[in-house]
Length: 207
Ligand SMILES: [Ca+2]
Ligand SMILES: [Ca+2]
Image 1: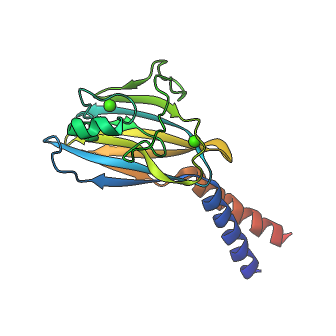
Image 2: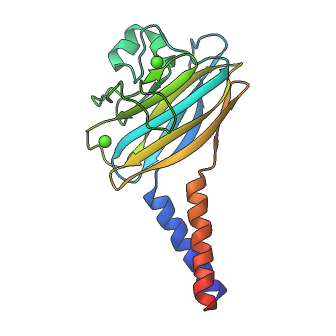
Image 3: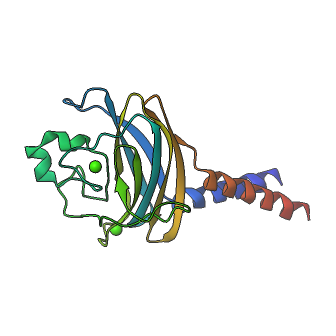
């Protein structure tokens, strides 16, 4: 019986990892970074073509670095060559659009659908409230979905959602920013699924 429960949990774990997008966080060191700021990349891995992401982040102190020439979405590669500080801009991205020289350009100026938040897209010094997507079929993969450059005094919380073609429902990731350090809280939906899967197997065996 124990072996069956373990096998059941292993199946649930495999399905969960295979089906849902994952997010990891990387602190990026680039020479020439603005003084007093640290850059982080939110790196997404999807099991099928990435379709859409949303981010809602509100700082209670400190700021995001927003380059004068930057926007809500990843800068055009050739402009980064001419204006190197664009690399530190805070933006949303899609497969192939950054730092590669690909031609996938996410759509801009869409409102986030996080409940209770405003209708206008924003990527300002204190607020990120964005939805972005592409219509390119680039398949499964790992890519930078967002770059955040935060000041050493930055504090706040954030939510980021990722969806891919085979999983149109969003996977939601929660994060925190404290003293300029960005971290991700382990994804709660996956944990819930694992626990429910385990309970289901035990209940079935006891009947
Ligand atoms: Ca896509
Ligand atoms: Ca920006």
